[in-house]
Length: 303
Image (cartoon, rainbow, N blue to C red; front, side, top):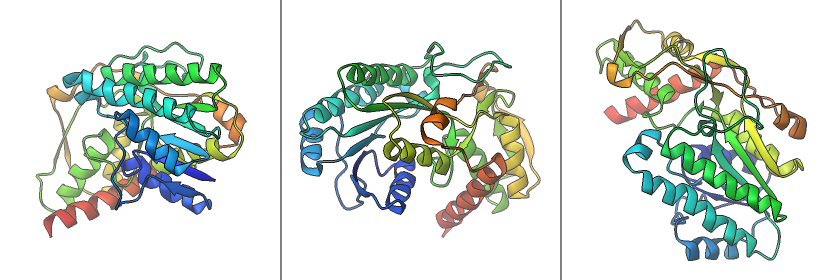
């Protein structure tokens, strides 16, 4: 199977490439020496798919920062929505019928009240940021393509982290601060936001396993949650990272980072039924992986 990946040199793309190659698949679009295709360029993505002639396409390319989406909403829609338009048009023009995996976000649901049950694919979407709205709009394109006979699976991926993630995401931010404390490059104080909010936290390796399963196990077209179903307060994540880092730190709440308390957890029963996928990593394993990675990155930055 030939798989073309947009955004393949990003955080998730690097992990996905390794997973797909381990399965013996031919992965295109991730080569470090080649220019990454701009998905907002309709002709460029069309040429890339014509040349690759893939059996499947994974659409990872995105503007993924919620904060940036508020500052630059037009840019987020241009990349996330127009990019999906261009990709699906290019796929429709292919002589073969490649499967398309559109990567969306649990943010499409919007935060729910604490104690809410895990969200199912049939639950209403309440996207609260330009990022989430752009992802919801892209998913609607995918669902329309399915209605026309296209082979599209659209995933709503819940929060995930792991080695290589940028430190402006919460788990990697905590891990980086702790690594700096351990290296003596930061006072033993962590600045945090609301630790009471609850999230469904996944290791990136489990997420790319889910994507690989959707490409290779004949799951029917449609929308799928990628979620553990296990709720964790952000405080639990921080505690796991502090334990993995084995450092003594004080916790200081930064008012600029505090957001209302909410919950965002998912039910992946549909994905499990279609593919047999199950997450293999717990919160402690995620914390250990992040700690090892960020310590290495902090050490490298000091060299």
